[in-house]
Image (tube, rainbow, N blue to C red):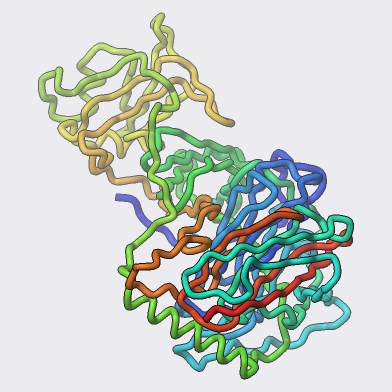
Length: 543
């Protein structure tokens, strides 16, 4: 079957693909809190400047360590100004200072404009700490501030009850001065601990050496470069076919003079298998795929990771509460992926179909084309097959046909002809010229198997199978946030984040306390008119 090849990743500095807009969108990033333990999920709010943004917006959000290296990332399609996201913190992370970033590809040459939020992450089961990176040349450094300023003016907040019990409803009334702060930037979080740390260390950013601005496409792009295995040279004008398992669609591209290609990916969610097939008439090729996230080690934090006594207590409580919750929770393996529903094949309807069961058994697949009348004509010369299609009037189509097996493009006709006919259900034929993306075909021949197993074909050596990460779902209605606990439930409610949501400049907000007693914190975060972050803090007791 398909050979799973290790990908040689290549980072691109520029791509001339349909531009998304002239100005990089202004992004702001807020998190519910700033102190987390491993195994938790970071709740964050991405706020886009509606005046400068052409929605939908495709945003990359990632976590980097204090040495600047990329660690974890997700991709999101943002269709409105405020979008909530969730990023899981792997259990194997070590304690240290981390930076959460949000950006688009159009911001690549100006990483100082990335939306950033500094975090402290603690691994309560390990004493290993992220090392402090080496200091850099100060002349090439840019200061990146992730801190926030406390304010007392311009915000008012009151509760219907200052002291509450466990699992009770609490309503807060609030008002933020819209003359001082941007109304669309206001977020509210309610915490059952003091895990909001506004005064975190600032990061430094090395000036990038990229001067060409990469243009943004509307959507995710799969980009790469094609090389000849024999000559090691880039291959220009190479046809690239992409098929997505479970889909009946086809994506195509053609490499430019540098062997580079780019394919606009559909808006699917989760991880799906993708098969990439170049033409076979140019010998063995090597496909290098670009990195999607910005993995340049530009951002660093030279401050040694340390926890104050109160922060150690918070981290201990977070770990204790998570352990209690785990004892009462059944772990269900969840997936961010959507199943791909293939309602319609991309070529709509075949002009002809060869139903294998309607004919006598023939010993091999080529005989179904040489012994039976039809529009597909198979020729063999010097041991190699070639195929051409006649149109409805019997006139031969000049271009080569597109060959597919179970709706996946397979460019090697020799491999297809080795399929056992008993493995196939039918052969669908389109007997007219067809254009898909940048490529044109002299018809289509699609071999459809009985069991969706590609007829056990030996895929060509040039075919490449990858698990491609499409979009991650935004989290507008997270079940463990803002939920109403059942008063008679025996399962402990030990949420650290009670509520996290964007709010208007004036209104009321209802939330429910958990089983954790002690001091609770209401945090209102916002931007002033100069886009500087501020926060307002209010506390109450749960007894």
